[in-house]
Image (tube, rainbow, N blue to C red; front, side, top):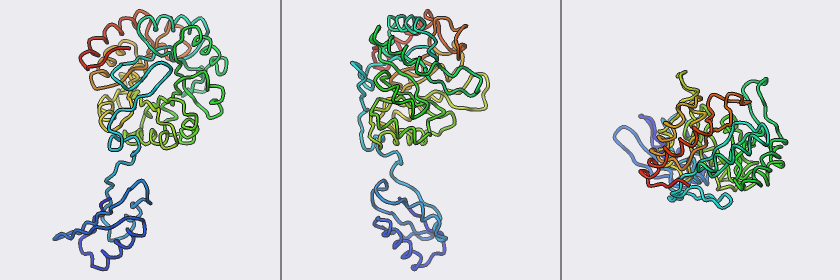
Length: 339
């Protein structure tokens, strides 16, 4: 941590700040300039009290952290990308994985048909929402526990690992043993009590970026999971809210590249929620590979026109098959291989 003092300080001011730095568990190293004095506080910023309290001292102009606040997920600590086992799969290596399935679980027949088609086309994991956090209380809220039972039956029939969103801590008991990757949605990305509860399960997590979260806030949410004992975290960029209305959200591809650079966790992209329209999903998916994503989560439905939720952004089986064919050369160019 670097502490910059205002011009006009006295030697007594410097000594007072140095004393406070030592009280907080750091060793001060003072550099006197012509106009300003800078005090370097030497120590592990994650192990001691925050030096930001020093900003309240009148003579202190600014306080700059040196270490990243998301230390445990930073490449400074673990340079290699974390690989996450999910059943017989490994996420985070040089294999590009695609999670596919409908926004909402509607019936066993719907889920089984979808699973069989996306698996044949190359998807390795099946998504489906049993619990649905919706903006409007009048929208379809999901089948709940009945939806989980359907997912379990489809899992047994196809062998595909299941990805599904957890909305409340009380749902975890029902989900464990059925769901292979617990999804934390954008609305719950900063629900820290839920993050801690999910971390305690040790189940792999797909952590979506909040719709208005900064990259640092997103990575700090991941830090909550890892710090509380669950290193099996997959980040997911799903678009952020901007002034643009032509698409549902704005896919932040720069965030994918930066997260891959800064963080040791795999990063997936959700082009369906980013675009909100099926005709843009393929282009955004190819772009995701180009910027270094480890995988995609794509919405696919047997008949999007009759979907209980988000029909406009879901692909038909034929569209998904074409998408997977289109991804192959992009994956090869990025030194990845489709699973």
